[in-house]
Structure formats: structure tokens, C-alpha cells
Image (cartoon, rainbow, N blue to C red; front, side, top):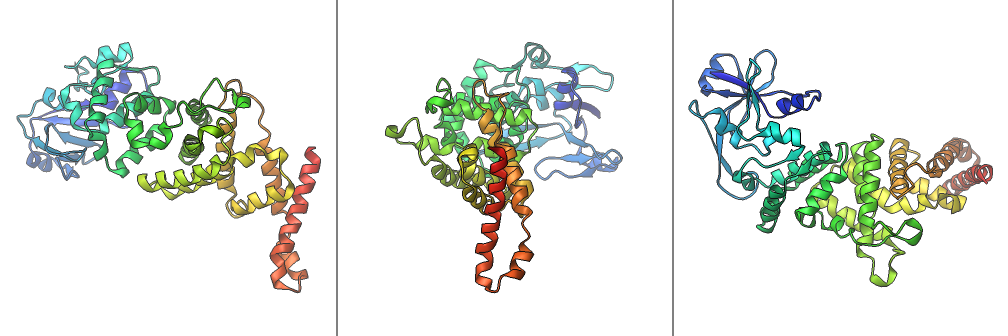
Length: 406
């Protein structure tokens, strides 16, 4: 029995990056032998075991054979006679198909080390086409390793997979999983660029794909289109280290502009309402977690109003705070403002431009929260009037804030 470190741990060591998790492949062993050594089985589709002491994963060397559509359509063969190179051959990218022995010796049958040095993401072999999830993984790795290019032959292969309908068999949960992981990488726009280049974006997120080529307003630097604006805003969210819900909301915030009638370009009147409808459809299709869905809907609905904050009346700002549930959910409202700040900065020359919107709305929220609702209720003889008087008091408080900012 031989044990090798494989995959991301070897890749990241060669790149000089910290290793988060280590995976191991075991050659020349049977499941029974693993159990005899105290390993605990965890795999259902193929033999994977947890080390009795470290609890790290050890998988028996295996081969794969396509047996249907999608990423679940595989049969696996794990046996003592399966060799290390056979196991490495089933992996997606050459940079992930490198193994390291205990003595440090590398097994690199597909020249992954050379591709690391050349900063290239390249598929291992023709079996890449058998798993459509690999398209998403390549796009996600492009977002993580933004200095890497995707090999032209790999892009061509991904295009053929898309045109062949393999992407259409992906289940929503797996698409969301890979999308969410990609959004949390250093440069998430690269994921979208790669998906768009191979045609997968038009299949998976046609609402987003439509934004590329849609012109921006003249005062928003028309030299970049709406799709590029969203990508700039998305990368700004990554540079700020914002949470997944914020990054997803930024990605979704302008979807309605893709349905703007030609006669209304480039002003996009009413795009917020169209964006809300489209965000709802996307989240239902991808089975997006509630936290991400709810924030994305808020950002789609209110980002235009928040951008126009200094122009709004106190009553309008107060209604926005109330309808966004900012008083009960102040942390989520702060995330709304973070996403709107990314929208503001996602324009050429605006990356470092001061954005007063967030402070205005935070000050307004503090003023609204300072209103003593209990005192108003105690003074009101008609219970029906409590809500109206409370709202009026909040508007008055916001007016004071606006007077200080004039």
C-alpha cells in the first residue's frame, strides 16, 4: 500500500500558498485493508475513508466511466490494481493532477508543474467533457488564480460541452455551490468572464449575460456597458472583503437593464422593478439561500433610491427605512448599503471617489431609532393613530439629519 498527497495541497505548495486541506490517494489497498487499519468509511459512491487519528480523507485510487448525463452520471472502479497515474487521469486540470510521495517526489504525468509555472489552466484529457461541473470549476479557479489564463484548447472543449447540452443537466444546488465559491474568490469577475467566453453564462444565467452590450447612462461613463459595470462593482465587493450575500446582491442588482426597451436606452427607467422580478426568478431557479435572496431583492429594489439619497425627501427616506425593515434588521441594512456602495464605485474613475450615501442613510437610521415609540403610544388615545404618529415623528427626526447635511 502506498499513500500520496494529491490535488490542491500539492498545487498550493508549489504556488507558495498556504494549504487549507490535504487529500490523499491510496494505491494498492482494498476497502477491507483500510478498515483493518482503523480507517472509517464515509464515501457512498466510491471508497473514501477518514484517518483514525487525523480524520483527514483518504480515497482509494479509482477510475471513472461515463454512464449518463450530468455530473452524477458516472460509475467508479476502485481496486488495488488501479495505479496512481490512472487516478490522476480522471482529474479536471493538470495543476490538480500532481501527486507527492512521502519522500517529496512528484508524480506529474500531465505536466501540471509546467502549467503552474506558465500560469495556465489546462484540462487533463478528453475525459474532461464527461463532467459539466468542471466548466464551473475552471471558471472558479480563474477567479481564484486571476493571473492564470485558460488554455485555448480547454476553452474550445468547454464550448463544445455547452453546445452539446451537458450544462443543461446540472442541478441547481451544484450550480449555486460553485457560483457561491467563485463569488468568494479574489477576483470573481474572472469566473463570469470565463463562463461567458465558453457560452455557459447564457445557459446558466441568461439574465446576467444579457447585460453585456447594454449601454450605461451618459453620466455613468458610457464607455463601459452595464455588464462591465457589474463586473467592476463585483470586484470592488471582493476587494472590500464583503460577505457572500453582498457579493451576490451586487451581481444581481442591475438585471432589469437587460430588458430595457431600445427606446428607453440608456436611461433605463423602471429597471429596479424589472430587476426585482428577475432576481426572484434566478433565486428560485438556483435555490439560493434565503439570506442571499432577501438581500439581493432589497438591493435590486432600492439601489437607485439610495444612489439618489441626497435628493430624497425625509418622508421618502423614512419609508425606505421602514419598508427595508432597517429598524429590526440593521445589520442587513448595512449590507444593503455595502452593496450599493459597490454599485457606486463600479465605474471608471469612481473606485476611490468619496461616496456620501452610506453615511446619510446610517445617520437617518440612527435618528429614526432614537424616536421613543413607547412614549408616543402612551400619549396616543386612539390606537389606530399610533402608527401614523410614530411615522411622523420619524420623518421629523430625519428632517433634522438632512438639515445638518445641507
